[in-house]
Structures are given as structure tokens and as C-alpha cells.
Figure (cartoon, rainbow, N blue to C red):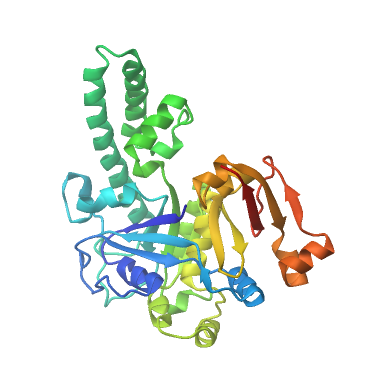
Length: 366
């Protein structure tokens, strides 16, 4: 499994500039006018993980394989997008398939860069974006209800699902998102949510886009977004899309020096992925051998057989046991053989909960 993040925002707030910088693809045209992204842009990006490369130095494998994150950038949303205004509404289906939403809002003043709202107000922008996402989800839900009304005439199960769908519709028509629906954990609703992939059922990471001067200290706009995110229980990340763009092409040493000049240690990609993992409750474990050192993405709390299934379903079906070394022990002793000799390699069974950073070897039989 991988992590997929959809990038949304109003036109001209730096979404495409950020996408270009994050993916290092430079394949999303960025310009100082609305709707410069006329079709959704997609890119698969390796997850930077220092632990993976430390392991690779010790093991010296034939190849190193990172976990990946899919980024999807769509045209800017505007007020009325759910009714066909602007272009972003045409590409919302691309966001439905993502795991989380990165909501980019502009948090800097610059008279040379047009803001479609006429002024800088990130909380107003958030309201516009999230209202349009709710309205788009309501349309999707309404179509589903129409179908269920027909099916429910001769299907008791469809009638129960219809009742749940109508209750959810009433809740969302009051301006609420699907994620906050109190009864969303009901079994029938889980099936409905999985079927419709409602955008407002996804967790949001708020991204405050600042200029170079806003990196060292939080300005009033950023503080407002942080307070809003805290009130919603959502993560907030501050980046400068312009600075991230300037990092493209620099080597590691140059990148560290450049970020340090702005008082920053972590680049935007690292911040966003770290927050994405936190928001979705994800973790990584590693496999390490002469052929490859590889990172695997799982949900925190997964037991060993389920984690093994990320590699191959046979590993889950025929799981016998797992040989486990903690990351710190592996780095301390320097090799699997040394860890085995030191007695820090453990044998774990089906109930073992995989820890972030575990180096694992699965034994199975099918």
C-alpha cells in the first residue's frame, strides 16, 4: 500500500508551483493567472526516509526501494465549482481516489500575484473550498439515493442503506462534512462511504503557503490557519512553494545550506509526508537483504500477518512467524548476523504488532 494525497485550493495560490517542487517533475504549468492547471496532474514520489539509506549503507544491497506517495493536483476550485463554475469541478473525481487532502491556502501578501478573492484571507478561502467539496459530495449522494429508492422497493437491505443515506444527506445539507457524521462507523454506512468515496470523508492537512519572509516566523495568516486546524483536529504544515521550487536541482548539501539560510531544517516534501503519515496513522517497516533494502507502508497497529500481506498475499495466508530486529538494534550491531549473535533478533507470532522501523523477515508456507 502507498500514500496518496490530493492537492486542492483556490486558483493561483501556489498549488502547481508546490506540486512541481514536491514531485521535481516540473510538469504542471505554473503562471500568474487562474486556471493554469487545465487537467489534473499526477506524480509518484519516493518517500524520503533517512533510516532506509542508513540500512542500505550497512547491507550494501543491489537496490534500494522507497515507499511512495502519489500526489494529485487539480485545477483551482472557485465558489460555484459544484455548479460548473471554473475548471476544478471537472477533476474532483481524481481526488475521490486519494487517501487524504492537502488544502493549500495563501498566507502572504504580494500585489504582483493576483488573488481571485481580491484579498488575502485564508479562512475565507478554506470556507469556499470546503463548501464546494460538501456540495459536490451532496450531488454524489443524491444520485446514490435515487438508485436506492428504486432498489428499496424489493430489497430490505437497500431500504436500510437508503435510510442511512438520507440521514447522511440531511446532515450534510446543514453544511457538515461527512467525516464529522456521528454515525459514520455503522457497518451499512461504511459500505456506503467506501462505495461513494466522499471527499469530505477524507482527512485534511492544511497547508499554509508563505513567502520567503514567512518561513522563520509565523505571520498572522499562518496563526489563523493553525488555530483553525487545531479546532478541527487537523494537522497544519507551513511551506513556501517558491522556496521549494528553488530547491529543485540542488544536491543534498546545497539543499541543507539553502534551507538553513531561511532558518528551516526540513523541506516541504518531508513535512507533508510526515504529516500525511501522522494524519492517516501510517508507519513503515523494512526488509533488508543482499538483493534489496525496502520500505513498506502499513497502518500503525497492524499485526504481523497483515503487514506481511503488503509484500504478497501469500505471506499473509501462509504466515508462520516473523523474525524481527528493531531499527536501533540493527544500526547498533551493523548486520543481521551480528544482531542474531547478540540476541536482539526476536521471533514473533501472529499477534505481534509491527512497530515503526522494524526490520522484518517473514516465514510462511502456502
